[in-house]
Length: 56
Image (cartoon, rainbow, N blue to C red; front, top):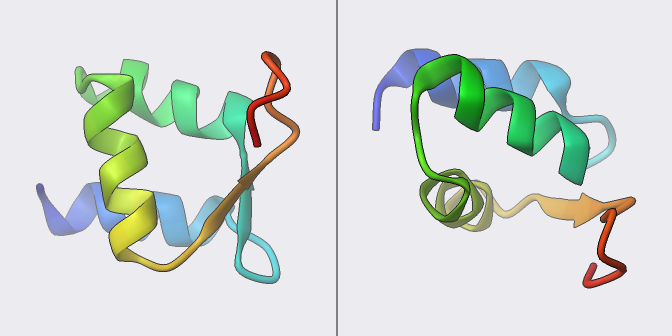
């Protein structure tokens, strides 16, 4: 995964958290699957919050 994607995720995160909607936006913006972005968020040790499905 590119450093650009990691940088974008870090910019969007606050206090170690990123919203589900923001994660989905990153996936669409960079043409990635939501799963790939989710795995990267895990790797960066961030938490997903405000999930539209209530999963996180």
